[in-house]
Amino acid sequence: MDRKDHTLRFHAKEFIKKLEARHFSTDTVKSRRFHLNIFVEWAEERSMTDPEEISRPVIDRYQRYIFKYRKKNGEPLSLSGQRDRLVAVKQFFKELAQYYIILHNPASELQMPREGHRLPRDIFSISEVEQVLIQPDITTPNGLRDRCLMELLYSTGMRRSELVKLSIYDIDFDRRVIMVREGKGRKDRVVPVGERALMWLDKYLSEARPVFCLQAAEPHLFFTGRGQTLSSAYLGSCVRRHIDSAGIHKKGACHLFRHTAATLMLENGADIRFIQQMLGHAKLSTTEVYTRVSIDQLRKVHRLTHPAGLGKQKPEK
Image 1 (cartoon, rainbow, N blue to C red):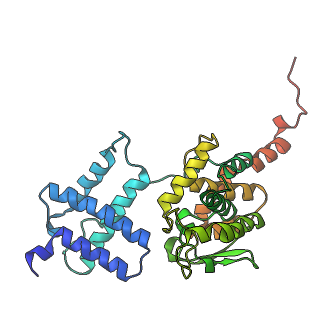
Image 2 (image 1 turned 90 degrees about the horizontal axis):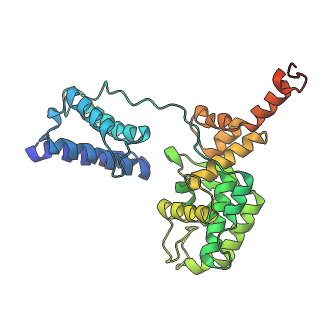
Image 3 (image 1 turned 60 degrees about the vertical axis):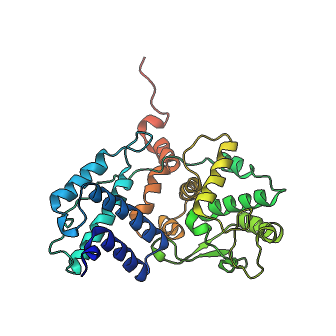
């Protein structure tokens, strides 16, 4: 092997090619490439260009660097951000060791930052959802498209990356379902969609999509005003703009609709396993976070059963 073909940068590129060949999702490949390149650049800045120069102390040093790193706004990386960078490194060196490119895996004992089961920071109330939904000017193609997008987010709880990839063939109006193809983990699933969202989707297909779609054979469902397919970032900025217009000061955009749909359905009696299937969670524990957000039922039980809330006790005189 030529010496130039035994550098960290060379093997990092080869690792990404293997992920693509194994049909990892586009988002996963993009994430691994981005975070692995950060490590390679960090190592090169310290004159380490050969995989064999990376030892366990070097990996520990990189982890401390990530922990102390500050973004441009002065804030540290989130725990998930730290994990993303370390997971890419851990998988990379595991691959190198498996193919005997290095004798020992320096990241084999790398411990990931522990994340607690954090609650979704914000959710909408029903009135807030309705306030956001009426913000787009539905007399324009862009406004009609945005209203349709938000209705679908609210009705189905889809991720924004799933919504922007929909094609016209994924919609089944008769069965009132949408096929989500290659969601997170490259898994397909079918999600139900409400009558109101379908009504707005039908209106969008007949009145707005023909304005955006430049090719009759194009199956993609949603487009920008210039006829380009929507990106996740574009969708997020559109939704955030309408939330701001509604005067609602809650962080997030598309995921606010996802959190809200799950929480309100649980409060109205939906089984948690149904919510798990609808949201596309691989593990039930991921969905169970919404049971801690859904406080209304707990409040009701507390009011009806706690001795201090029964109204039978009177303060002593």
